[in-house]
Image (cartoon, rainbow, N blue to C red):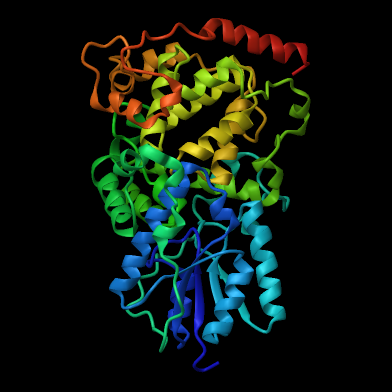
Length: 472
């Protein structure tokens, strides 16, 4: 094996710094061949996340080229592609960073077993989380089902410092053939909206690092108040970059702790948000059903609507419910691929409670529209809002989207940014929505803003009656 290369299989860890698998490969004394495989899990992504993944792959390829290396692109079944590359290159090992959602775990378990049977070293490394799910336990030895006790458990855990970017990535004597990224057409499903969505993306390791630095310098000190104001740039925005591993959670964690020690007390809430993300992976690992079915199984009997053809569902997707907070948030997501967290709670509550629609309808729509879509975080978030998930808002708590708007967008700056109807001079962002949406929706900025499909008070009563009727 003295000359045999190591295949460094990149997935949702598209960076060079603080990368345990890459650092180990570079330190092993063998040539390193970086690889990205466009397998069925990548191909199954929705329109926006697939396009965004393509941008991240391109950025990683450039970063590797700057280091005198290359990113080899191949399309197909992961195991078949790896076996072909092993045969072509004589590689004796494959390294990768672990993932924790059920589909990725199933794939990786099968790949590791098959490669070892082939006599190939197959090693997985930590990198996508701070605390791997099996390392965090309750006092009785089980997994955490409620967030706050988990936060208290891990808050003071030692977290190693971030690893430096390898000074050199040893190259092989010759490189295997590589696909052309353009041939994958990862942005095709975005159609005419691709350019607009791309303009709202912050792509790559360098940009993610700058984003973290700017947040710590300018916004973390006021994070507690401003993170709830959708018209204010008060959050880190790092969910986009964490999704693709363009920045490590460990780097974010230590930046947050340094800010806290520097007297920026709001940084603790930022750290809690990082652990909220950890909680999602913790639950997906221990209870995989959370990504596809009700975490609280007694909710299987709840009579949610599952028919996406309903006019109310269509109005929700199009940002035409007549509830301004809901519509502004839905349009923000369609244009930018992201949505303010307060907006996410409001639109999820409105769909699952006011409209009594199954949370999976919302999950699937988000999976198509979000550039920070993540199978664990989004499933937990939707079930938290619906009442069927862990650490959930009590089912009988129904957010009032009208009073929430009065509380968090008093001057309607957020609404004005995203809703054009009934406005003499619509904002550029509000108008950009009409450049994104399918022409078949038949919407224009000159339309009259609709009346509510379900008024806030009517929806609340309908939800509470439904819960009572079912004995919840």
